[in-house]
Structure formats: C-alpha cells, structure tokens
Image 1 (cartoon, rainbow, N blue to C red):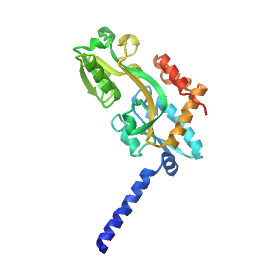
Image 2 (cartoon, rainbow, N blue to C red):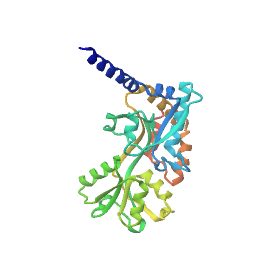
Image 3 (cartoon, rainbow, N blue to C red):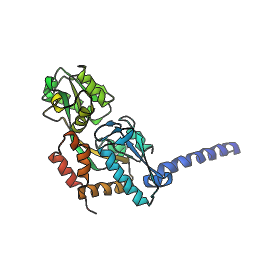
Image 4 (cartoon, rainbow, N blue to C red):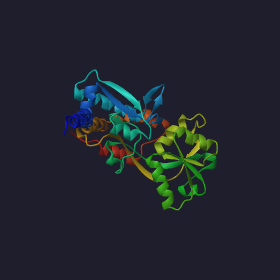
Length: 289
C-alpha cells in the first residue's frame, strides 16, 4: 500500500469513528451530554398530543413531562432542559432512530412490526378504531360503509386495520387518505366523505375541538370497533436502561393513582369514560419495584 492510499484509508476511518460513536451512545448518555431531554409530540393528535397556545399539550405530553422529571432525578441534572419537538405520523420513527428525539409521546400504537425499528414503554392508553359520521346521516355499523367514502389518516396503524377489515368483511367502501385530523372532519361536514375513521379517543377530541361540532348531538360513533389500539411511547430500540427509567415513572403514576387526574383533565373532559379494558390496562401496568 503506497503512502497516498494509506492516507485515504486512514482519513476515511477517522471520519467514520465519530459517527459510529454517536450511534453507540445510549439515550441517557446523550441527554446528559446535551443537557436537554427532547420529547417528540404530534401537534395533531388531540386530546393526547397537540399544540395549545403555541405549546405542547395533552394527556401523553403530560405523562412525558413526568418522565422528564424522572430522567432529571436519575441523572442528577437539576438544570436539564426539556425541549418539545413536533413530529408527524410520517417522520416519527426516523426521529427516534436518528436521535433527533429521545422519546415520542403521542398516539402511537404498539405493534410487532414497529418493534423491528423501535421499542415501546409500558402501555399508556388502550382504545379502538371506529368511524364517526354526522348524526343526521349516521353510519351505525361497519357494514353500513358499503358504497360509501371513509377518510382515514395516512401512515397510521388505523389505515392498515381499516383496509384489512373492509377486505376481510367484503365491504366495498372507498378509503380516502388524509394528512390531518381536522381535514377528515371538514370533508365529512362538506359531504366529501361519509365518515371519518380513527381511534375513538382521537375522534372524541377532534370533534369537540372543531368549530362546527359543538355538541355530541351533531355527530355519532358507529356501534362497533374495527381494531384494537394499545398505545405506548416510542423509545430507541435496545436501550433498556432508558426504557426502565421511563417505565418506573409510568408504573408509579399507575400505582399511586396520579394518572387519574391527567386522564380527567384531558380525556374525561371530552366526555370519554374509561372502558373496562383501559382500567385493566392501568392495573396490569402498575408494576411494583
């Protein structure tokens, strides 16, 4: 190997080392070095995660504020900053994998396929997919969607679950994909679609937020669910130390009953009562030390 070739190889190795070192860095170490905890949130996932008066807000966001307090105590960093980073349904996985955020606190469903890319904390919520229509043109059951148009958010587990359900049950509905929840309600109001499909908790939050839907008399949910949606917070894959810190905070909130206040503030306030399945989730995830 001549001197010129040796120099190029050495230089290439030198340039790769910092990148590899960064990728090997654990989440807690990264937080300590940055001096800040980066929380990803979805501005369009009310009442779990959204923007209110220019600030991140919602049930999931408040749970992550508690996790931030746990991380600050664990690392002994009283001056640790908490930074909220807006993410979308499209870029949330990349943001975790690339280290742009340390945890994603929104309405992300835990699936086995997604765990090929990321890990999840303990469950934070359980809901199910259904469809919402206007009360005067009610879609009472999923089979009533036959021959109709139904809007659903693109790049969500709900989109895949809805498509699979319709095919399995031979329901010839047309799926219209959208990028924002408000667009689904607007299209229903304008008659562009006949129903809007999403998770029950998100449908409740969005409908009460919208200016044209001010009471439950104006809209109606179908009488059945087409999917099961267990939520968790996304974290970096194979980072057990950080995940344990987050899980300890969540388990403590469930054991102490402190989660109930957050639930009532953000979810109970939109008229959604906890289902037996959700109550069981809180009990099963109230792990002891």
